[in-house]
Amino acid sequence: MGLVDQVNQIRVERPEWIRERLLQRRRATRPSGDQKLMIIACDHPARGVLVAGRDETAMADREELLGRCMEALGCPGVHGFLGTADMVEDLTLLGALEGKLVYGSMNRGGLMGAKFEMDDRFTGYDAAAVKAAGLDGGKMLMRMNYADPATADTIEACAKAVDGLSDRELRAIVEPFVSTWMAGRICNDLTPYAVMRSIAIASGLGRTSAYTWLKLPAIPEMERVMATTTLPALILGGEVKKDKDESLALWQKALAIPTVRGLVIGRSLLFPPSGNVAAAVDEAVGLL
Image 1 (cartoon, one colour):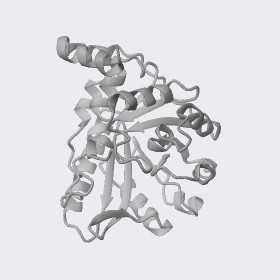
Image 2: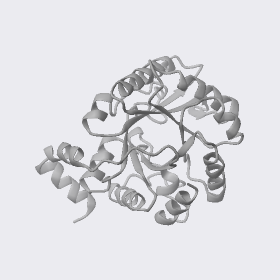
Image 3: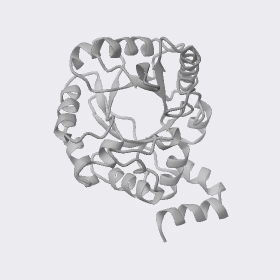
């Protein structure tokens, strides 16, 4: 029986098992102060993003996607997973999240290519659901477009999510970008100054920043960029690049900064140019 068939059978016959399995899942211990984390991410499909590299439908086959996630999560040195409820539940039912840190993706309403993309509403987990599912925290995308009024609602929603998670002593992972409309699509500004501005704004969200971590791109001048905050940061993977050595070099340089606490990588490891998921994950883990 395939992975999809296994999960589908439970969803049809015993959907109540999903909540039971989530609460029975063996939890991970809290990371130590000097531990660098490796988190596998897969929440792009819920925003209508199925592309990886040149393949526009790479993430459309759930059987293959689950298999790749399970292979990555089974590699030594991988500490956790970040995804939407459907992915978290599928992988929980398949036993792939035992002993792992798990973070729920919260706002997926800003569908890629939509005219309303900047109105990035919370259509996934909320703080109460993160707690109820026994997860370790929630992640939110906060793109700030100074020319689009919908940005204000997104920032406010992120601030409320930070409050909701911190009230429950759960980690809030904020992924901030300064963004602009270019030729009808949203583009993130990855210049050092823009990333520094995004960090400063994200750091001030909510009633407390005690449980807030940042999810940031690895860019040149990363030491200068990270000097903007005392908050811990995880480095994201971004688009799948042909030159994996370029990505590895940027990640390694960022990881040398004390406030950078690890990597949270999705398509770059799940759909590497080589096609070898385990080898790509092992290389990334080696940087830690």
